[in-house]
Structure formats: structure tokens, C-alpha cells
Length: 160
Image (cartoon, rainbow, N blue to C red; front, side, top):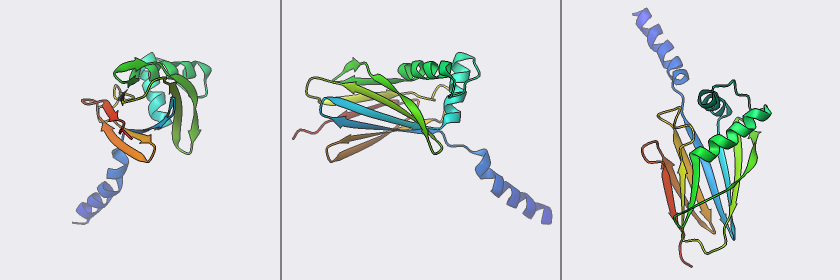
């Protein structure tokens, strides 16, 4: 009986260590004439996906890794404004607490009606990866959870 109790106690303590959550959070701020985008994820997950994708030992402090991160983001994060693919500026990244914070920006000229974000970051490495996308426009906020089978968030701007 004592062995069973110890086993259950040990299993209960270690169950939380064995399971890891795979999630990123993206904030899209819709401002007049530009979008400001902040992606937060875990640095070790990004290092792992860069190592796996580019077959190198990735460290975020290395200059080569910075360029690979930029290429990886460009191939896994797409922005469409009114169904037109738009280019964006990679403004770099920084570490805040335990998160890697990636900064992107794009400008637009016409009135927006709809923004679509396709975010497959880390989904090539982790099947259970979830990418949460929050859109902020004036006093409105909309949130989406993107999974590998459904990686696109579509936000329609309200008409004022």
C-alpha cells in the first residue's frame, strides 16, 4: 500500500513537469496608416525550431541566428489586408522576462475593411502549438486561437 501511495504522490508531482504547453501570443494594433505587431513566444522553442529548420546550433545572441529568425518569421507569418498580401518590416526582437518578443510593422494607404493573419510559427515543430492572435482597433478587441489545422484569423473592422 505504501508503494502505491508513493507512486501516486510521485506521479502527481511529476505530471506537471512532463507536459509542456506550446503557445505564442500575437497582438495586432491597428493604427491610422500602419499595423504594429508584437509576437511573444518562448526563446527555447524558437531556438529549437531554428535548429531543426536550418540544421544549425541556434543561439539568439548570434548574428546569423537573427537573420534566420527573420527568414523563419517571414515564411510562417503572413498578413493580408483586404485579401492582398502585404510586406512588413521586421523590427527585431528582444527578451522580456521569459519571453522572446518579436516586433513587426506594416503600413497601408487605403481604408481597411479586413485583416487576415496566417500564423504557423512553431507549428512545424510542435503539433499541439496554439498561436493566439489579438486584434486591437479603437476600443474593440477580438481574439482568435490558431491551430495547425486552422492557422488563419480574419478580423473585419467595424464601420463607424
